[in-house]
Image 1 (cartoon, rainbow, N blue to C red):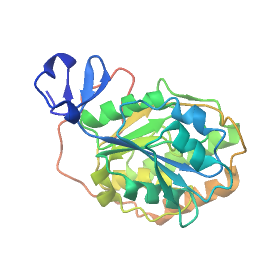
Image 2 (cartoon, one colour):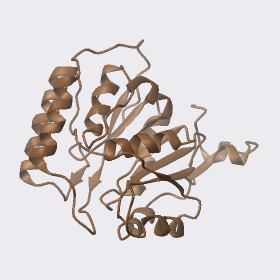
Image 3 (cartoon, rainbow, N blue to C red):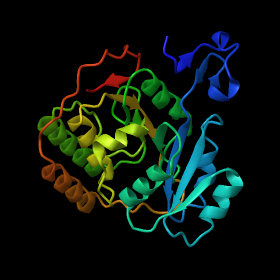
Length: 270
């Protein structure tokens, strides 16, 4: 049995601080950091934070120079929240800033608009402690779904996903989705250098090129609760396409690792 995963009955005699109970039958050793990039999301944070599991190690809120009460609300909801000020601009810059501030072994990316269900984090963490390097959320894997994509965005995502799969040898069912998790050490392999929204696509490409073990996690995306989205289908689609074309279609291969045991509703993609 993995040293990261033990039934509750086997935990007697272990140092309690080293294992975090997730359910009555499941505990994890690796500390989990959740990174939330936010700008003027004070109204949405209560919905985001109420779904976060109590067992996570830390919440890192990256504030993009909010003019509302985003920071104050976050500290009220999660007193131990680590607030980091973003010096640059863009979602990619915010995520890179948040990743650098994490102290956990596992990092989970969660949007601040209320579209993600924090209770799904256990599925991401389970995939990682089970052998995956990168747990990629998918709205189109069996068991996933979305309430927030227009037909043109669905079409664009499908086309861009197909291009990535063909060019880099991936088997993704979703591409432009920001709910993902990974071991922190993977950052050394993917060397993120993208400031904008297209950072999620860049991550998906580079984990495949690095030969990292990817497992898709079915995820349901809800509609943003308050405020308007900054996404623009055509503009952002072209930026994503530019990133895809700029990345060389080569894949660095690592030594083969033992296969991950199949899960009932997860799709292993590389």
